[in-house]
Length: 500
RNA sequence: GGCCCGUUCGUCUAUCGGUUAGGACACCUGGUUUUCAACCAGGUAAGAGGGGUUCGACUCCCCUACGGGCUGCCA
Image 1 (tube, chains in turn yellow, red):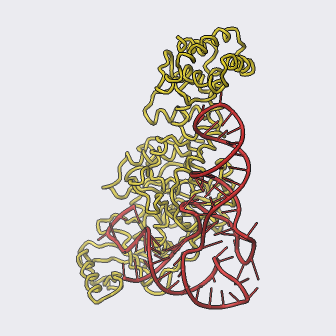
Image 2 (spheres, chains in turn green, yellow; image 1 turned 60 degrees about the vertical axis):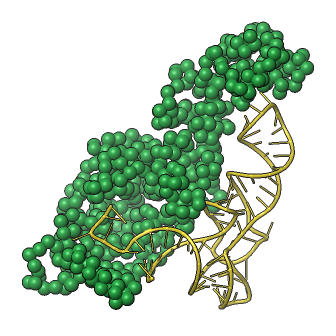
Image 3 (spheres, chains in turn cyan, purple; image 1 turned 90 degrees about the horizontal axis):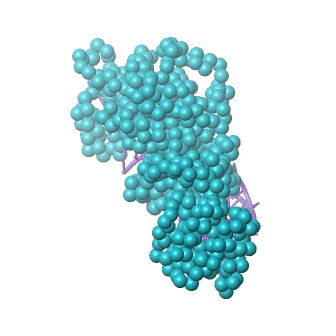
């Protein structure tokens, strides 16, 4: 995977549009969009962090494009200067990177393209598909209030300037409004929602360029998506209604409409819109909670999408399977139990070296000390069995505590109880027999079994003090596994410590 | 208020007019075991409600209820 650039400052460059305004129609001369390579994009606003729902939207876009040999682009919708921050952009890039979603080309700054947006607004003016509107916000408010007073069920603002004679134009600031069709209907042919029909009468002439010359979001998305060659717009269904107005811009400019795919939002466990009170909403919080990225991807892919009974799959398999047809239309709820279970499968499937590496990243992300070289070595060996039962990283660290601690081992309350006088005596008789033992499970097993039998105990009774001595606690991995990992000398030393 | 979208086990979902409505998570029971897990086997559990259409509806249509979204010179 290509290392994505991490400095937002370096990344935010305007999209290279070498094509002059006259050549829009020539960008994809003859080929219908179905023949073109897929281009998708993720376009977050840098107002906070990467929301888990945004992460899933990005994932869907990434899977769809990459699974088809297409491109996945990233655009930061930073036109709201008040709310956009470079820190938020950095957080979004970090979140995507952690999820393993790499993007093609440079990150596009929407704000940096404002001149291009304004240019298109003026083109619309020239084409007669937009007009100058001199109405003030007060006039608009008055208009709406009047209509509502008349009992209108909805108040679509009708600008008096729509068909006004240019000779009557005052010398005043104006906004550019799209001249939207007043009658008929706009049909959104959506790959997820199906055929959605919007009555044009319910839509007003939206502003494409504000009176201060700043383009609006509605115009900017369309221009950017077009210029970036986006073929498939996969985004939250909160944009479904917007799609109708945006489609009008495509029509006004004679541009080819992309394939729409409006996916449902993610809800919290209680079915309400996912918010802070449900706990984690930011992707990075999930990283800090210790969910492995591969498990996270798998879970998020299955949340709102399905292909038969497929539940646990690798990213490569997801790339193969993912399609728009499998996306559901109802919002899905986050289920932490299932997330954890999915992560457990991925933990068990993971390559040891890769897992060790990701564990290191997890420790860094939560500000815990990195493993020492010695610990890492032991961990690498222990991973072969630890990963089978651990689900998330904190789980893994906890199960590995026996190799992270060092002598003298301080037993916890239960461990101390297990190391009573009788048990210590048994350990005392066991230790000498280990000095010359061959350090394999096959060789150790008969020794421990014999000692247990000689003490008149079942092996289970011997295991308790062994755990206490080796790990300082009573809940641990198998005693053989632990002894093999920490080695003969260390094992004997710990047993000797405990026996005294 | 208006418009748009949605509604299958507790949760994620399969089904694309005819199925004993399937799988996964969770839960319960049993097994295995060296503790906790993990693992294995089994079980409980669903078409929001009401009308149509049809020989036959979870599936198609309408209404209601509930949830969500949009309705800005925000994105």
